[in-house]
View 1 (spheres, rainbow, N blue to C red):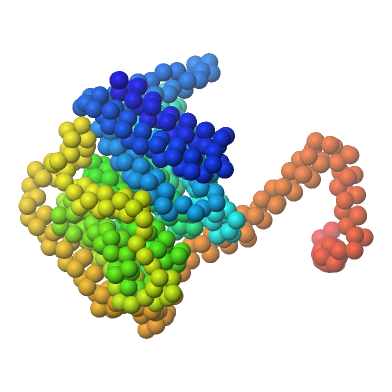
View 2: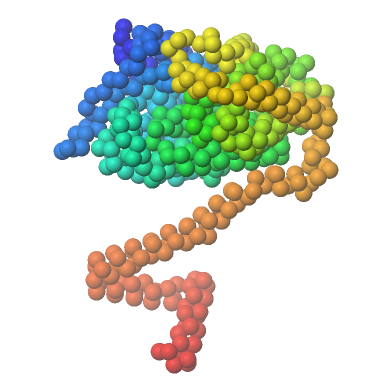
Length: 616
């Protein structure tokens, strides 16, 4: 079987699974779960076959899709070392999340719909990974938005989940508006949207790099990867099932934005790269502070995701897309582990999510507790674990390219260790603080086995020297570039010392400040104003809500008035429309509505003042 044939199976197996579930298995929950999990296993197996068949070669297959005169849209696969690495990560982590869902969603009355949603999401995400042009990427990009809307809103009968799904969908559409305009501009500028061809054009003539195109395409990344100022949807998206949080907010959807930037790195001028780096730094620090005022275990992990996406953004902006991809992969391992372990905790504690109502879980759920702690150590960048290698490379790149960025990111690592230590010491140590925690028990094998596998990957996933030769080409190239830079050994030693100090101080400080199994948040108790400020998250949601309700909605009503009464009523219908407008206004004089009478009274006063002033 050729690489192209294997990739066709990889792409269409989850689509077939989703179609079969939608038409025949929505009420046959066990069968739907079996089909979806089998499809996820198949796409991982065929991904391995595709990588083996391609070897170290790049596979680029394209064919006509649609034609409109001289304008053509193609479809095809672009399978190089970057997409090979991303494909294996997405399919394997996705398979583990499917297996975990068998236990976590076992009693859900709509699990047939849930597994169908997982399959359509995998189809959409794999399309982004394999697409060879911007238009095809955008098609699957929107399908990812649709499927994530379905999954986040799985519990649509609750207001929280319904609102979170709508918020994620709408906020992402804002970023996607810039994305689609950027695609149109890129086609006009380059005469193509093919990734490889655009790279060749820029390689032959660097003056073809266009700041506007890059900035517009970057908007898609800002929305999908929840970067400032479109970050507000990600914490609310925790209203969905926990395995969805692991799939969307750890390994795949939010990673799609970073992956997309890596695919089009040649389009970015230096000035915009610097902006992206500082945008990532701000996101990392901001999210770190916000996490200290969260009590919900999933929301703490959501802000941790925002922080780590900031590191990926910073690595890309520093000019090391391979290092950004490296952290994207290692982050998928340990963050999927943390989310699934959090799901195991929620399952064991009968859906309790407040960490201050947990306590003592390490004794009750030892496998979950140990794997969770391994995930924390990898996230904090403890020496030898996967997170250390990728985060170390980012900080070294910052040390060489932009020292202030390295300093801020090291401080971000300190914050990460602080709020993750707070979570672990409070939830897993001490004594149970609620009935739910006192009756907690270890999860079933379908949930525990994926935790163990991800814990192993969180330890060894960064040992890139053991990766197959076909994977990590750009990662290895960037790491070699750093390694052979003058002063590497001294810089590496400094980063190791300061990085180690960051996680040691963060974890130890959290233990000394919060204690074991605390029932109350000590920061809220002794520094309520500080806690309130952190809890506000800089009032982004309040500002956006005010803008939508008080400015955008009123402007929309004004435009609606112009459309209905002026354009349609007067310009289109002419005198008949004018007569109708007069009639409508006249009827409002006698409709019995007090508000109408007040408006007419105010209008009369204004008219009287104008007449008395001699202006009329």
